[in-house]
Length: 434
Image 1: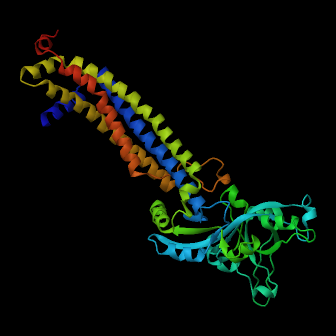
Image 2: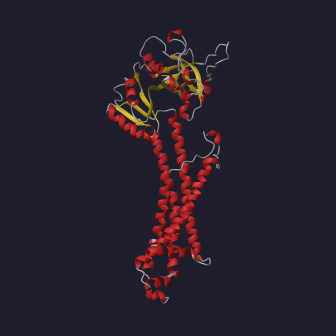
Image 3: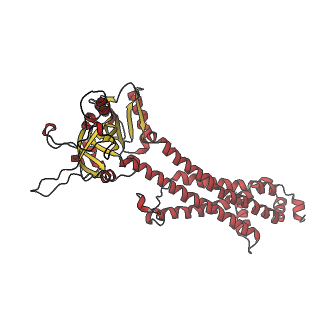
């Protein structure tokens, strides 16, 4: 193996003058390096966008969700608190809490069912969560933002958190705390009319729309168009709004590691049985994540064509080396080298070209990814419209390994035919120069 490798290296790097063969070999090596570097940079950026979108979507949503599998036959989860206790016993689960979610109509104060066509109304997605989780939505207000001040019979309105965009559209202002000695300034009133309440209204002959009023206690910065339509209220108040006393829409779990979601899902499904549907953060938006992953692998296949083109150049340059070194090949065979030895010499040449090109590409690609991650060299155009200022980068060791393996395999594969032709050279005719 040692002498074969030395001969292969001498054929590639031992020339004393620049020739067409050396130029083509250098171009081939550069093509491999360019393809590897491009693959690493592009896939790292796509991984960065994937992680960014995932983190945005799960920042305010559960990592695993449990709902009733019997859609249409039962509304919500009964005994959600006992299910939450069961879920908290699982490994990797840091929290489990029931929630109530549904759509509601924002009603101008004092308006009734007969005025549906008038005024500025919005359909919003209301989510009822335990007050302790309010700090994850609005760190300024914290848990107190959703708690009802005083007793429920004192007349104080329950709190609600709305997005900054919705507050601007409807002219809502949050509750403000003033210095000691001054009374706090109340927030805007937010009457909500749920779908069950609308149904109840139209089945009655008399009576107005049974709205439930909330006080805007705080706002939060929306991270997507969907977040702009969300309103957060306390869990018990959401049960009252949607007439789901004693039941929850689902059970939300948060984990220590997102990658353990499938493992937690399987364990929870075994414990709860088929009466419950368990979904991970990926299952909830599978179509979006599938599209992003498909785009990544399509980009991988397209950019791999750069290395494929470089591999064709390797075939040409090595065939020229075989023609140039026919006398040497004949001499080697005359001294006892077998066809297998000659074949391995030229396969080692392909391996060397692949190693040099892949190594250079890895160094350049990983270096650029590191610089982008640390120093944000390439900013995003119109960054004010996004939540990030520069292209995100996330390097996956598996991606790097696959890129390196594919590049090496293509380079060695390109050397197979030239190695076969070199092994078939007749020693007598090669030494005679025929």
